[in-house]
Image (cartoon, rainbow, N blue to C red):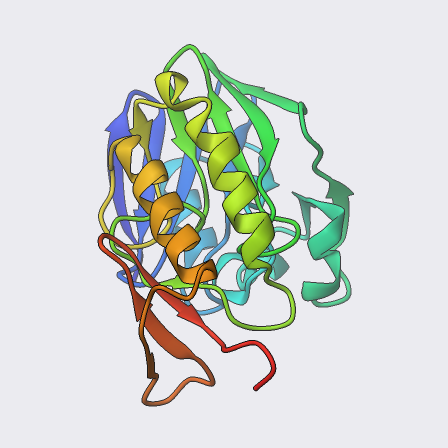
Length: 227
């Protein structure tokens, strides 16, 4: 069951214990960032808060962020992740620099490929608020295995995010601790660089087709190239 938490005026966190979504309620419409698993009940949670029309923005195309899409029918998602969606959903492209306004919130799209090729973050520069999907987390694990992920791009995207750390004082990840501070962008980056350099020791995951690599601050689930 999804728990509804008021984080700040007109801004709600929807939490089901596995993944979280974010709802902003304006005067004429609402913005929903991600839709959870199919069984998360995000649509019902949204309707407990508002009966306004809802515009859905997706941080990326993984199933735990898109499972509830059928209840909304349409979404915005970076085109590089469209292949991860089921058919029958109306999809519009999300691109670098796109801006979505709702109430007194203004979300700017930042493309941050790596966790998936189509991963994006949403930045409200005035409120210094960043919604990075799964790309910034405290401790993790951050999923980096599978054909639709790229460690090199992830590292470059973390460098990009570190460059706007002064404009992202409050970070709201979709997993694990929330909120967290901007220092975790640099921590994730340093551990990802060590992972790329082969400095982290991997341990076979007990049930997923990958290895667990624990850096100083961050755990990554990653597969050994060539195996």
